[in-house]
Length: 88
Image 1 (cartoon, rainbow, N blue to C red):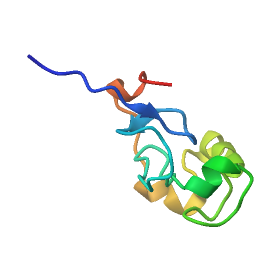
Image 2 (image 1 turned 120 degrees about the vertical axis):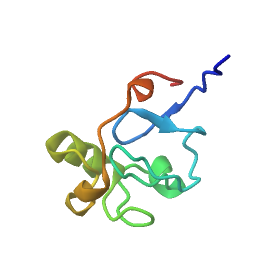
Image 3 (image 1 turned 180 degrees about the horizontal axis):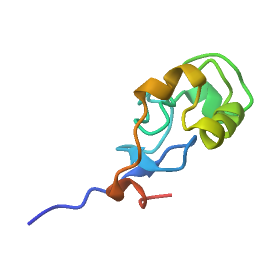
Image 4 (image 1 turned 90 degrees about the horizontal axis):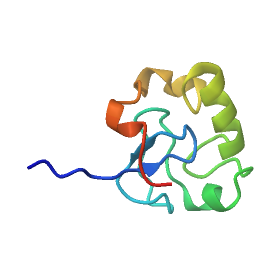
């Protein structure tokens, strides 16, 4: 029997790629390459820390060109079927 593992939503791209609730554990989303930063989760306009751009800017960037930053485009991939739904 296969066990279904629920994933948590990336705060940047919105796909369910995190094994744990985003809380600043520095996991990196393979879909947008956002790094889960505790400071940027608390202040989504903060630039610096684990990510050079703010979470607000990273979301805009993802919608524009598919990655949190232009330089990260080479690291990203399309979401898998099981990353389309999960825990909010």
